[in-house]
Image 1 (tube, rainbow, N blue to C red):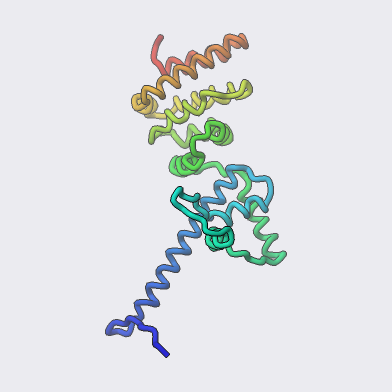
Image 2 (cartoon, rainbow, N blue to C red; image 1 turned 90 degrees about the vertical axis):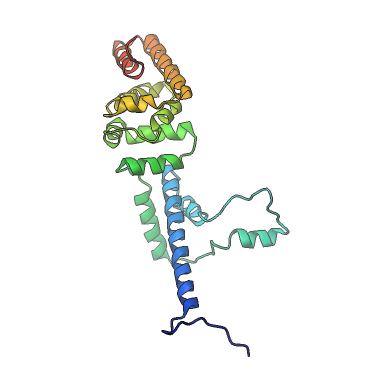
Length: 236
């Protein structure tokens, strides 16, 4: 019977065993962060049930197929595609505990820092509707706190672009958000880094807000929009 070759050094260290343990630790760490990101996505998508939440977490390891991928048989494909999500039988007590965690995680957690905000913002992709919902849920007051010093990373332009379309009942929320941006200490610096496209989006947004203020004949909205225009575009 052939023996397995084991690598040792002079101190009798089994390098194969050490390498396996290190790889296992790396894999476990990667799995933790994949599932943690999946939990955050599930919360931000406002999934309706615990089962939906659990399915998203269990599928955290899945990757989309590339064009060159070939599937020889559906049986083989299913085995490979889902091998990292082995079925696990859980007891009633364990399920109750996980559902309790879901209810806690299922509430919207306001970002505690600008860095946390950016991490969650990037996960939203380019969906303007999701971006607006995220901003409105956080609220203008908290946005002012998160970006008290500056709105970094080109975020101001992304904010302006996500406001290109909004519902009539969101007008006040949009105005409040723009006023919150203006309170940033380095707001003028953020303005200076707007691209031509983002400046055009800003101009279009201001025209939409002015038109809404005119239609509603609201002196308060008219005055607030004028103040926003002055800060974003300078004196007219």
